[in-house]
Image 1 (cartoon, helix red, strand yellow):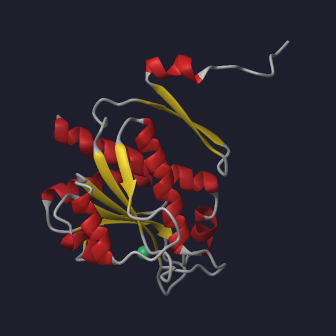
Image 2 (image 1 turned 30 degrees about the vertical axis):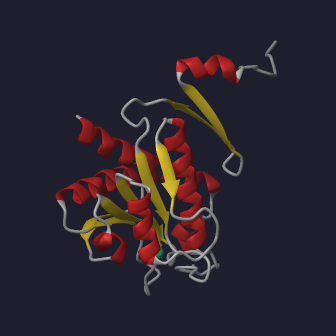
Length: 219
Ligand SMILES: [Zn+2]
């Protein structure tokens, strides 16, 4: 007869380096392993928009600011499970100016800056994932790692890695990239972005992209 309850004391998992967290909206138990290459690394995640600035708004009314916050928070949880020291430029729906976001990268002595966004265009047929960087080779490498993992995990059209002079990319002095997960202006992608499991998948992809970048640095 199957047992209905499996008791695993958290105390027994800790010495093995296994940590867990519950993602209730997505209905998922996150199980992470301490990764020595991520341990203690200060990584700054930047959920785009917020507060007075909702960002893009989809045809069904989804707000970019809440998509970016949820995905960035989930990514931070995954990084924390792996032993990294992630932080966020905002943890609630509030206005944070672009200069403040950049200043946080300095004051928290972060080693990379990952800005999370959802795209929008006048033509609702336009869809897919793209990631931006500005100028440096290191930022390009970060953008490529993030884009590769997003495309593999989300399975949306690969619009590639592009260079653009966005404020948060131009003004930060550390490796930085800006991921446009999908298009809120595309009805199918707006629907996907509203699903907690999809947001968790996006967060997982960002986590893998960051990990692969950080590992490349220490190698
Ligand atoms: Zn945006």
